Length: 132
Image (cartoon, rainbow, N blue to C red; front, side, top):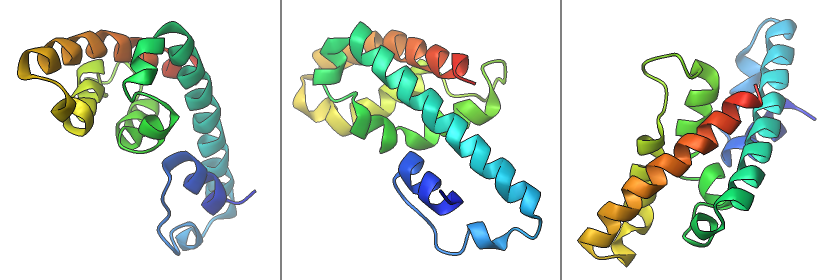
């Protein structure tokens, strides 16, 4: 499986020619291994999140959300690590959810749900880190 295929599976998008700009074959293989590790960690974290927080899965924090709207944040967290002060936090994921689904709720309900999701998303990020 090539880098383009793995990157498309993980992020849901692909920029043509990006994988071919590498001059060193070793870097390409390292990128491919990193992408495969990320895909495996994301899959495990998402499955565990769905089992632990089924209500959030029904509210839109599902496979499509983590591979779509939240994908850049999750990939950044996986690359940075939990100790990095700039790493993604649960509230960052909750804000993305609120932008996408918050219109379905009243302001008070949206605020409560965003705070609640921030705690649940912290668990998702912790499980993603465990898959490293």
